[in-house]
Image (tube, rainbow, N blue to C red):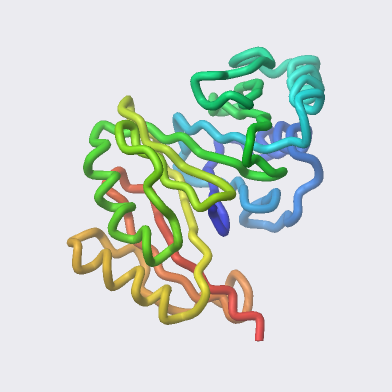
Length: 230
């Protein structure tokens, strides 16, 4: 679903300890951010009220994850068990991270290991739906549920529901070429959204990193990125 999703944390050392226990060794640990595959943490304006679900191999792994996290003193946000309101095969467990985000280990019909889904809250579901619908074809996602809307790509999903807004999340969609990055930016500029960085190289990330950034209606920094590894 995402090339990467990033949250801003109050205490990077405390959050890194939580996510190392939850997700294992980081795939990248630098001065500015720490990543576990598609999910990362960094310092900055604090992210609030996010739910993130991570796929694990089976129900026994869900149980073991929850036990490991709660034994370490992290607060449970929901014991392991089926959640048929989501799907027949859905089985998850929830723990709060140091900043109060609800973090889940989950297995279901289409889950795979790694970042499986995000849930964000907003005061204006329709406005957020219009934003992501505008770029759906460009970044390769589809609207699969409309009431509290969910976009998916077959391997992951993100959902917006009504409530006190989630704050300060960075969402990046990987695309196939430079032209698609530029189309992402062009579509959203035509829609009147707020530019947060025009298409261009960002060599501070790596040579060939080409991205564009636009703020969604709740101020989340949304990106299309092409990693030119030539």
